[in-house]
Image (cartoon, rainbow over all chains, first blue to last red):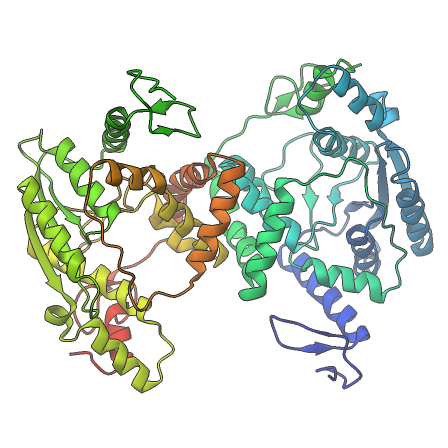
Length: 309
Length: 309
């Protein structure tokens, strides 16, 4: 199989376009697609300070590298990397190291923020309290809710104007289906390509890889020789997302393009929902961060297990 | 297990409410739920002539019987039954008989309309032409497209003001997912509980069973002693709907309520999409029936196989 572009030995054939790619043309093509998405949807502006959430996993490493390649052309744009250390014993340590190294290599400023410094407790400590208290919440719930808040707090502290995350096409299609299967119409409104109306206190989030299939992100990481950490978090469990992932992969294998169709549909639907569904945001009674509730979800879960400081 | 309502022997426990039902209370409860849906969403008006599409399958028999129970209270409402005979050798014959008998038993006027009389050919003949011509269209495509038109034509001829079909919760949830997986945003607009804006020439369609799970419709049919025909159409094939059905059932078993959540979500989404997405309907160049295209889809498929009269 030869590359459809340069006739070198191909390493990948796209099931969508049927085109074959050598390593070099594949990487260029993926970068071009990300660039196109950024331009078409105006994800960034000329003087943005983009904070890239880098866990050290493949998606975030690809995001950091591709954004660096695209955005370093623009002198007004600043790129900073941020890793959240949730505090799971034996996990993330190498992720933090990989993120730090990758940032250094690109000359990108790198920051680390830990649950311990923000919330006073590591995820391990919080989850131990939860078990003590007989809480039904899973470690992944604490992790997701608290990580989102940590990213936003740190983004504001660093003066970032955009927060970029490495969610890929598979992640996005799964999230759309999960929310539909749960009937969460309001959450669907947040899943469009452009962040919905800006709420004071939330740094707008963008997902430049949202049209790139997971396997292509993984291939890019592999072809780039990125150091990957394969440790599995000890809290990992079979979640609804895993079931939906499995189903989507099964459907996609038979009908290539379905994940893309789902994400494309939500791009059209999200602004319609957003226009109708008015969510009023006010400061959290406890921490002052913006929330649609009386007390924000992060404070609520911390309160539930008695570690709200 | 005793009935939660009358303490008779229960035959069914709802995985949603946890309530147990004896045969009598189950049937009453299902009827009550259908009545509530009709009232809440104003599916019918005081002087409606409701044409019920009755194939003779369990869903349509339940629909006919439940609607007869609910609507015969209202003297202004007329109920008529219609069976479409597609013309598949060995299939439908007993379906037509069952539909006729069921209608007679209730004192409901029953009509039959055949593909042969409307299109000049049976489905068998049309599909044989398609095979001859090397068409890629499957028999199920002809069947679905032409059945919809036949129902609408006959509804208009009979002066019906509403067309009621027996789609249940499973059908509806599957259709939502299929359209999402295909990225068909415009089709999602048609899937709300109330028919979208009325287009001249289309008799509004309603689906009173759309919140009743398939297994409950089947149980109602069984407990009512309805005669069921178990013949399988010879054109049946493994379709995307079968895959989606299987997946939804798998998810629903683990997380009861998901089908309902999907249909509830589309009830909220459909009017939002409908408001934004303007579809212009004009008369088909060939037959004059309303269509968003130049030539309507039924005429198009007939033309493709050279049997458009």
